[in-house]
Length: 334
Image (cartoon, rainbow, N blue to C red):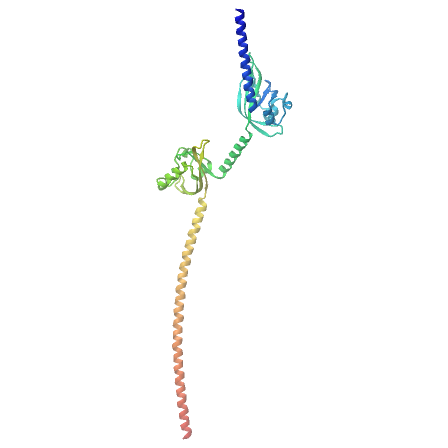
């Protein structure tokens, strides 16, 4: 009986050792690929692996004995939220999320991390292990993309559609341009903004078919606002794909160019009217010139006639002169 219990105890011990060895092997594997740091229940640093030290710019010796607040901004370290974090960890609650921390140089480091309390046999917290991945580069890129989209949204009208053409959301610039509220357009089809003959055309169906094929469209579009007025948009329709290459939405970026188009149209109309007026003036001038030419030709004709008359008188004068000379000669002889 004693031997049986003794053997059972040995088996149980062996199993415990195997479980411990397995846990240690798993922990070592995690440590090779992840940043890890261990804290006392009050937040004092016990140890940190090389990956964590590289991420934060410290050596392990510089960290041991320091408090976790070393990685936090002073304002956050003094906050009730920070105190609540360690209170919950001390109660054995695991906490995961994305955390902003500071490295040795005071630069922002973003960690995707899990704080995992380690419990003893009495369910008391004896330490807290933090396993983390440095996602700073990804967060910076996401922030840049978000800032870029916000900048675009401040200056442009933006609206998103499902691949079938139904409105997902629209920014305030778009709503102001088209005269709608957000709840009036969400779920409605893009055809709401189009002229009836356009949305019923084969070309319109092909337009959405091409977007579903991933084709990009950018040019000037005629649209109708809530009041039924024409709105001209310089816009681009951009198909957006997920990580597996599947189209999941279409984003439209647009600028309202209605005023410019109307100004150009007014200028064109004025130029046309001016051209018509100039053409009429030119025709009138031509008529005047033609009349002047006719008058000049008439005067020329009359002058020619007069010249011929003067020539005839001159000839008659010569004859008379000859007759006078003859008479004078006879008189002299008499």
